[in-house]
Length: 129
Length: 507
Image (cartoon, rainbow over all chains, first blue to last red):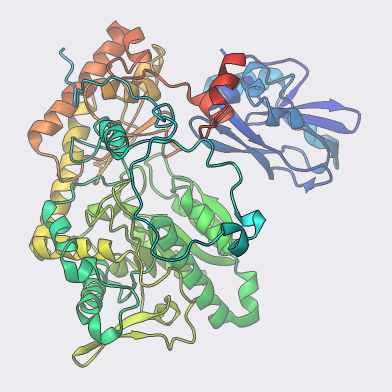
């Protein structure tokens, strides 16, 4: 069973969001990393890019396929995790920690609240996973 | 179950050519210079000269080189060695006759800059192949320039772009959306992007076909430049609504590009031009049997409607009375897409293939390709999950759903197939089927070989239940076992370097 962390917000595209003030940290879930398989490359945007909600902000390449990653939240990219350039495997080993991908200054704080809770995401996975 | 092995060779391993190097060993002796010797320093500036005395370049004799590469060539798996059921790739047999014809001196040794009057035979061959491909696709404008499938795609969408720019003028800028199904080849969105379009993805239905409602919704959003569609699609199903799909796109003001990767299911039976398709690329190296995947260069002709014909790459090969000539006077052309006229040797082979078969034979080949895929599909439905119920066309798709519960995944099944002497099928494509296995036997395979393949697949399905570790650890009969693909991709070592061994030891 995929690991799901409390206190995070989840999207149906298998991204997680952690909110701190007006900054949202975004990554992909344990379920997503498991479905992708061994991740070999992560492509991320640059600081200062503005993103619309549901826009693709980068891609994750695994030994099986390349998948786009979508931001559930609109805003401006204020930080990206450059460490993933050298250690893409962190997406597999620590998806909720070392493998956070970008931090966004949120345009609309309500967007995170509209996402799935941990319990709702778990329910969504058991229905669709 | 006894495992059949395709090749065996006394040498189980082979050193790198660099490791065979011996200082001072050469495979040549140059004659004495019959002109005055010139000092290189005087004629070449320092920055253009090597100053490392060719350090690291292997010093070997001719026989060292020949044996090294010949030994390794015997480790290869090729279409001449066995079945190659790589879905969406049409790995069909290239007959020796095609090779013989391509080696006729007049074709093989013709210089690409030979004047028209001395190249009439080659021009006639190009012209005749264009005519045949026009008849096969139902699309009269043909360019043989593109060198591969994705190149043909790129040419195709550039024709669409040129057509829209002419038709709509400034307003063409508002028409930049290319619709592409979620099951498409990855090259489709790449070609669209390169030609200046943005991509919107059309969903597939649970039956594996284009979702018509979603298509209509996206058309309603406006800005439609066109659609890129593979038919049969990449799950091996014929898009039964193809005519309606083309109508929708045309009503929205766009054009329809068809990816011809799967034409082996249609040749001699159905014509894209008759469906309403505006432009298509063909892969001579798939559908028309020319060598594929390391065996030779590709060839991706682009075929289009009369409406798009003025935009085709220059020069065009045309016929005036009894003479063939190159027509450069095409003011609306997108220009040249390849040096000279494309990969001419492939055109010789493709025309040989077409003429050997004739119209009847081409149709029979298509029927046999579809029948073979359905035969495999029928015999493997009990062992493997078949995500779509409809009868397949020339390729059939399965998933690992029945095996994954036991921890055996698509990659493991593919690797185990190597132990049974087969090249694996296409895996993890298309992305809309989780753990996809896409099998395309082609018409080149007889029933006995199909049965052997089916037996191997059934045997692997049984192993996945009884001895899953055997499948997960495969391959077991190759010189090198399961490769660590993740590390290879994360930390690629792309070439040998003189200090490599020292680095490896210290690491």
